[in-house]
Image 1 (cartoon, helix red, strand yellow):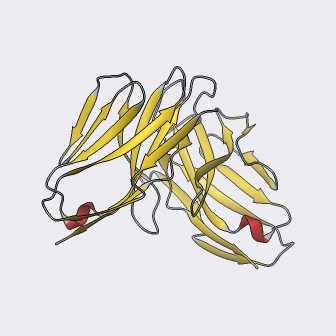
Image 2 (spheres, each protein chain N blue to C red):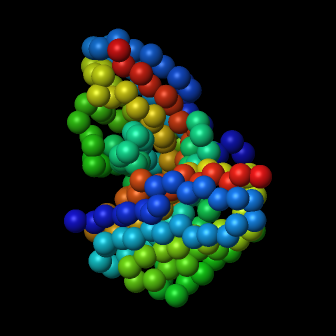
Image 3 (cartoon, helix red, strand yellow):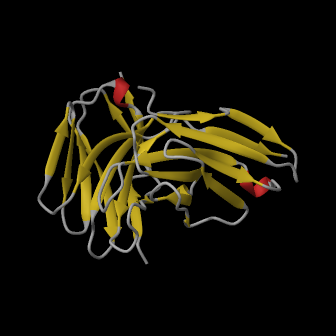
Length: 111
Length: 113
């Protein structure tokens, strides 16, 4: 069964304290892996798409990487405004267009 | 360019009542989706429309119907609401194709009493 697991469920960091969020998946023939940011009371906001192992993408303090079994979202020197829930989703080959989401990691960055 | 819009933002229903959630996108996307988000369950696909004129069931379709009214609009109907349908509902759209990005609306928070 296709599955996405994110860890940790919650993460508290001090401002400037770098860390990583993990997204593990069991999908054969991955078509794409997506990272979203979700603020309370709002819809998910697209961050990155990764297609193949070894691929990396960056945006400001965020960098996403992909291996054959997992993806990491690295947060360098986070600021309080980076506080949000980060969602990972995969697109399996048998379901064109459909995404399978993980449960998310809620990040809190304290000043 | 508003992206994906949803109405209403909030709704309270009594068990057995019906209602339609509206979604529209102005990005000329081919595919549209309806998800529900519940604590501890993540986002789950209810129905999707790969292109105008087609709809397919997702992971949790029971109790819902959809209509792809035209390329821009995709509505979700609850014929007889149940407390188990209390959730936050998100609409999303994408260009369509094998691997593409979905863009989400702001959500509708629905409570069924």
